Amino acid sequence: MLFSVILLFVEFIRGAALISFLPIYGEKTLGLSLDIIGIAITAHYLTDTVLKMFIGYLLDRFSIRFVVHTGLLISIAGILLLPAADKPWLFIAASALYGVGISPIWIVCLTKVTGERRAMQMGYFYTIWFIGIGAGPIACNLLMDVSRTAAYYLILGIAALSWLFSLLLTSARASGVAPTLPVREQFAILRERLRHMRLLLPGMVLQTMGAGMLVPILPSFAEDKLGMNGSQYSLLLLAGGACTVISLIPLGRLSDMLGGKKWFLVLGFLLIGGGLYLLSMAPPIGICIALTGLLGLSYATLLPAWNALLANYVPPKQQGLGWGIFSTVEGIGGMVGPVVGGTLALWQSQAHVLLYCGIMYAAIGFFYIWFPFRAFHDPKAPG
Image (tube, rainbow, N blue to C red; front, side, top):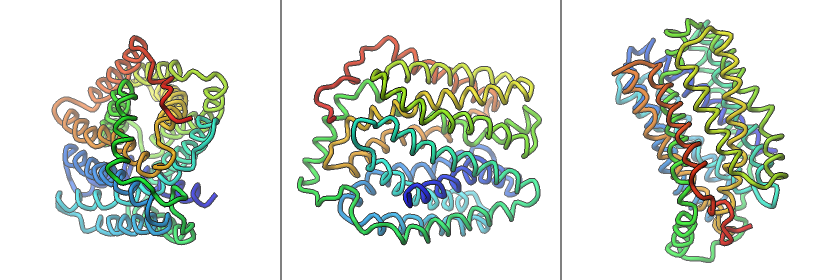
């Protein structure tokens, strides 16, 4: 329960900062261009991604409490730096520092996923994740309509609260046992897992790249192209988030019952691609809300099956390190995406970013239709 609460708080401030506060504060208050904002968000994902593998290694050797609360303390330092970040390099540095505290609690939660009902367990953690990452920007947008300072102190206050809760965590290691294999052998095992799941690698990288491309441009797209204010943008996010949260656990349970995960992935990717393509055409607000709800349902279709599939390839005795490496592979796309999205928006428009993301997600869906799926039934994958 405590892990879920901390994950909720951490994702709340991540959503509030990345989806709402940083893009709006950077552009409207500091006068930074979208490419600089994209670089700052990439810096956040860079530290988050690079540290995932290292933090996974630490979680196999040090206590959960030590790793999580140290990371969150560094994140608070990044948030405290933001009001003084009147220069691009300071803004980027503050965003990078903030990324340090995201990885530990997420990897700890992933190590708790065991047994045959993995998709349902993944659905539970992603429900917590979506409640946090959805409620954060909604609350932040509503506050920023009144005061950006109030929005900043909300982010800082929740960050401090999550750090205080982390002091109550267990002193045990994430794996529960002392590691018995040398680091070189652990990496050899994980390299073998990656070889067997190579057909999944395009999806691991490109899906997070697509999401990363959207982060720096969504607030300005909603305001400039859709004519939305902060409250209407919050309603848009609420539609997508609510559909995702409501659907995650039932669809995770359905994935466990039916066994095959291929078509959950294909359907999820294709629906996301189609939804983004239609959204790029800047339809009326009512249709935008309906499309956002469809995107939320599509994401709920995709995520539990996808992460339950990845869980099959994590060696049981290297849970922290395994999830760290897999999350690092996924994080490569999230690292590149914001820079690509911000640059494309500067060269062309925000609508083109949504269009290209839609094409990318649809391409991933078609890729998994036409390629064989031995990776989904690999007998060497741990049960």
